[in-house]
Length: 205
Length: 44
Image (tube, rainbow over all chains, first blue to last red):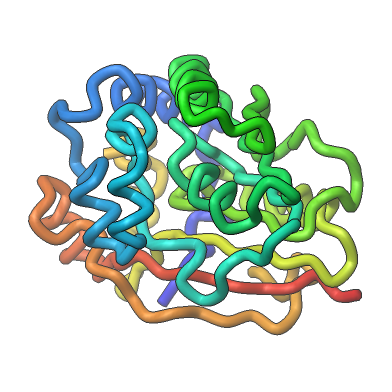
């Protein structure tokens, strides 16, 4: 299994970022459109999220979900914990985190796509969640102070970042000593040819 | 990669067939791509 085979590949980071933004702008605006991955309630069920809680969320909070597994599968969050969601998209995992930590906790979702941020903020307002907020930012430059988080979560995001060591270093910076990184991501069992890794279209295809 | 970044107590959960039935399934099957949950800790 490999999760780091893309780490040393020279792709244009700015171009890749724009491709990712473009793809996830589509997912925000047209969640039921033609995508190469599942989305929404069907995907949440497929990945093992709690049916009862997902069913309680409005469509806008779930329909653009495009995760790859559950960051909560190995360990649920505890009441009162402070959580950062790296690449929070339309907010689905942040809302799950907000439910698990409760009103005494706090969740900050970070995303770089304006349309996703607008959607997540609107859903948080609809749900009346004052302990869940969303900020504009990059995984490589999280707008969070040093050591603030008890837990960092992320779902299907790190694989889309060309400089994974930089992202992990930034996550480590915002975690308190003893804090946890709970993330979901894809990994390949067979090596991907370098020519394919250099094809930026395949990173989001 | 997680250990190199200074994380400890790394756990990897069971694979999930993330792309099964989606239009990206063929590419996922070609390289045996699955979704996984990961857990790691920053040393105290």
